[in-house]
Length: 221
Image (cartoon, rainbow, N blue to C red):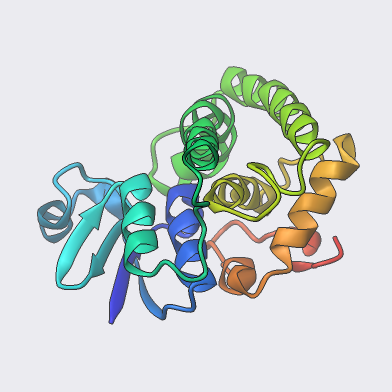
């Protein structure tokens, strides 16, 4: 049995869930209150972060490394292209969303609006929220530019880059922080990836005190 210690709205956890589901690997989800720094969890990952994946008798941490481990262990269906240049582009975009997008958008919107309340870390910082709301427009425009040249974010086939982006956007969509009207191209991309069977468990997530908007699980928005 594969077990994932996770937080439902964590985009890093969602990226792994999408990867596992796309490869039709069953996983037991264990919701982790990582901010409490429970001794058992700290033994699983001294960094005190989710996700942590228990697989093949090993405890694996850090989402990018976990996803590549899954890809190497279960290469079909592939989420990484074969050509070195194409693999580079996937890794570049995964880093874009997990680093730049996370820093400029996810941490400013999701963490301020949701995580602070859940972890009792205070009230949202309006300056951060405004900065995140401004920054997401740039990222949507960049994605639209990529998708005007390609079928998917990194090329002509769906890859881990699409799951990395969709993990962040799905978490933000849960709190209605994505203006889907800004780009029909990006909206169509998300509708396409949202309709995949791998997305089903993501769309039924519920976080206490934060009900999702009606369109969240609607495949046609």
